[in-house]
Image (cartoon, rainbow, N blue to C red):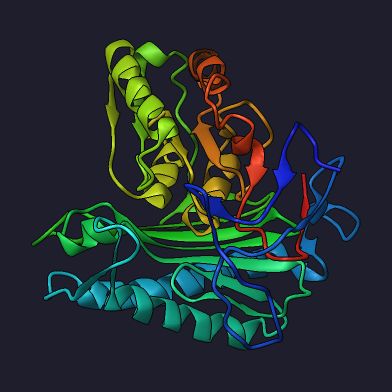
Length: 348
């Protein structure tokens, strides 16, 4: 049974149901699948019976290092394409872009992960699901989070690779591109459940600021301009008045990592996808931060709303937002999970 009022359903947005089933090993399947299974857990299932250093017989450090290697390989493809002519296509929305770099980067990551973990399932933003549909391990890949920024050489984009075990993030890495034309650089983040988070090899921690008034906040606005989007516009106005400022940078992976690094105090958004957030959520948690839904429920990467913070301003942020989110006509639907692979077990 689901905890905290959340339900697992097929993926949908704006009333559109996405069809597809997870099939045999090695076949690619479009994302947005059927109903997953859910269970309640009494603690971190990934670090339980097999000891604090292993997940289902595989060392957490090894999984973290594999995520780091995969993200690094992907980022090298992105780096080679920076400041070069970009061939852009659009997805369902004219503002939702995809480039050859997205696809080439995902191919490089897939090649590595399928060689190292042939029995795992993988979800890529561009290619969908591939691998073993019966695996408890699910890699979530965003080869280029912030494609529009990349296409304009605006420095807020990243390669993100995260790993779930029964729905809980256990390892992840994000390579953030910084600087801009003539001065490009990277920040490379890595984390393993229970092992802390690092940036360029150094341990990181969330900030110590304890009030919204002294905080720098971040949000995002997706391509579905419905009532949740409109409410977030109102949140943007409100928090601009009561904080040091609200930024909208256009890459969830980067936004989460910057909370983990202590640059910003909080990040919130509706309708994020598993590949957007899988690695970044772990960065926040392993650097001492907190992640829930905007309704205050336990968070999973399949949730439809998120607030990630340094923990100290979390209650104050939710105090304003949660009651208003509950007034939305989609408030109940926001508690549904989405993009859960058919038959995949999510332990909450």
